[in-house]
Image (tube, rainbow, N blue to C red; front, top):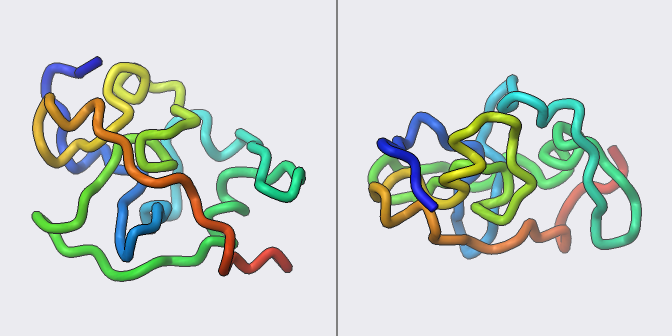
Length: 114
């Protein structure tokens, strides 16, 4: 596991308050906008809808907030891009971060009415 030069600009998710949050942006890494994934209640949601339901999450602090390459803090699903296949984990701590995984999405306070 490991890409030659992982960097925070690759981030699609982050950890704050012990939870995994989608990175706040209007676009998603290649293939994610059309991807659907199962949620804990057996429903299938698109990644954009899932991220909207989770909410924006706490503010990030550059250099302090752990950021991850894939949309679920290193736990998949990966986008089509090669860097997410080889370095799904943290992209703010060099090559050693590629294998570091954060928590799964937490739906306990998600807005499932979307």
